[in-house]
Length: 168
Image 1 (tube, rainbow, N blue to C red):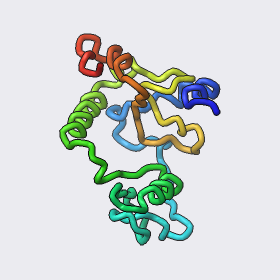
Image 2: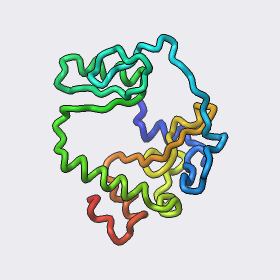
Image 3: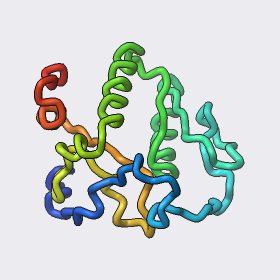
Image 4: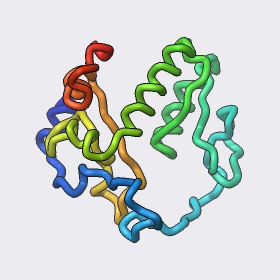
């Protein structure tokens, strides 16, 4: 089985699918990113904030308690239905979470020109860019991301050449 890095390398994206919008340059939602509202087939197949199945409008991202004996099942279902979930009771210290959130805010508050210094390559797996799933949808996502696998120090060095050692 190929690694994720190999799969990305073997299926490169066109540059237009990598570079996110400069969100600060828009006053209205561009048509390229305007999605129509849709309803799910049954309207009931979503987690509520406690991990159970009765979220009528499907508006809550699943929150999964790792102390729940059915956590693995909930994670699998959340991945199938949502593609995302939030964990609680994971044991990660709050100060570490706050530090990571602070660095993310510092990164994403930079001007686009600075973030583009660490742009993910067409066949790359890591760096700044739009979601790799973007080409599979009729509209673009209102999204920018930074994919990290392993140490972020190489990308950090491109963005903060004088202040990257905190990522080692």
